[in-house]
Amino acid sequence: MIRLLILFLFFTAFINITYAQLSPREIAVLKADMVKAVENPRLTDSIYERLNNLHNKTALVTAYVGTLEALKAKHSWNPYHKIKYVKISLKTMQQAIDMDKENMEIRFMRFSIEHYTPGFLGFSKDLTIDKKEIIKHYQNRNFGTADETLIKNVARFMIDSKRCTPLEINMLKKYI
Image 1 (cartoon, rainbow, N blue to C red):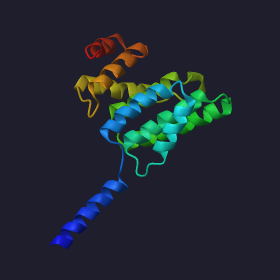
Image 2 (image 1 turned 60 degrees about the horizontal axis):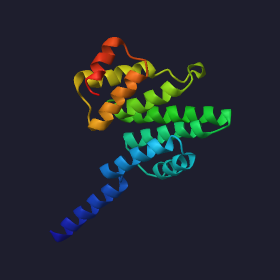
Image 3 (image 1 turned 90 degrees about the vertical axis):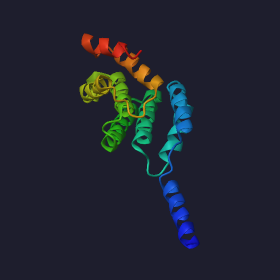
Image 4 (image 1 turned 180 degrees about the vertical axis):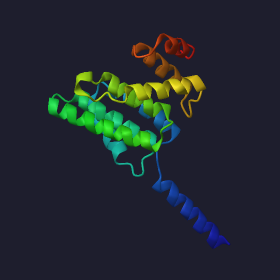
């Protein structure tokens, strides 16, 4: 019986290590750091290396990696590297969405990347789809694991993006 219990505990610990991800506290710190990384290339690279080295990434962590790849594009001075990083970023974001199609935060990250990418580059093909998915979450009041701050910030961003209809804007204003 004791052997079985020890084996069970070992197996549980192994699974937790194998699928080790970020704790809620680490996610909160990561979100704060991501805001700083928008203007800090070294912080972008540091966070990117840390997250990219995690094994068995969750959809949310994969999306953070994709967002950091987009920030690498922002920080690059070389136009070739800018385009390369945006392509990689959008591919990573698609992987995250494929892992969790209903995650509003992931949809929002891709929406914001495509929103800030110049349209003439042709990388903004999912803006409409992501906007519809985000608006659907607000209509259904289905925010999953999103906290109140994220819900407010996404609503504010969507309004400020000027990509929503007046009806959508009125609905989003209820959450600010």
